Each structure stands twice: as C-alpha cells, then as structure tokens.
Length: 152
Image (tube, rainbow, N blue to C red):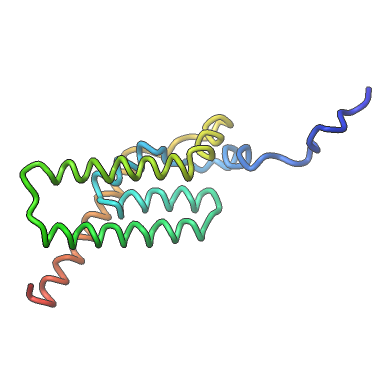
C-alpha cells in the first residue's frame, strides 16, 4: 500500500497532544474567573500566568502578571477615591471576574480544550482559590504599607 502523501509525518506530534501528555494541569477559564473574583484581577492574572507558563509561553505569563497588577492597582486606587453604593463592590468583583473569564477563554480556550481532549487534567479549583486569597493578602499588605508610609 502507498502512504498518503498529504498526511503529516508520523514523527511530528501536535502541540496540543504534547500539552496533554505532559502531565501538567491547566486551570479552566471558570477557575480564572473564581481567582479574579476572590483575589481581584491580580489573582485571576496569576492563575492565567500559571497556565501560560505551563504552556511554555513565559513572555505571555509575565505580561499577564504585569497587566493584572496594574489593573488591581487602578481598581484599588479608584475604590479609595470613590464611594460606592452598598452592594456595588460585589458587582464590580463580578464584572472583572467575568472579564477575566472572557480573556482566559479567548487567549487559552483552544489550548485548554486540546489539553483536556488529549487526556490532560484540569487544575484544582481549590488551588485557584488559594492563589487568589494569597494575592488578596499581598494586596492588603501593600495597601497597609502605603497607608502607613504616606500616612494617608
């Protein structure tokens, strides 16, 4: 029998198959949203960055971290300057959680789907929550430090 001349060489495997076979667990877009809701955009961006790092995209991981830190800083500064009505804080948290979910789906959705389709496992939602709470604690410590240093 003749081999199919249009078929990909057998030695070449798809990046998606390699991701699933690597044994690394990826966070889902819903877990990114959970981390963003609990830990502000910084929490979500850390989880997003972990996925990028596990996918071998170090530069994208660093960008995600920097943008998440910047977004959290802006939100925190605005929250200190503007008095929000009762319940608006929760809606704001929901808004940036949904935004982070959309970003994760857009940037990593295909890779996550390929990962799970090739037998790869999802990371733990508890891990995403723990990362988010650590990010929240970090932001609280930075805020207290700024308030003490500048005696605002």
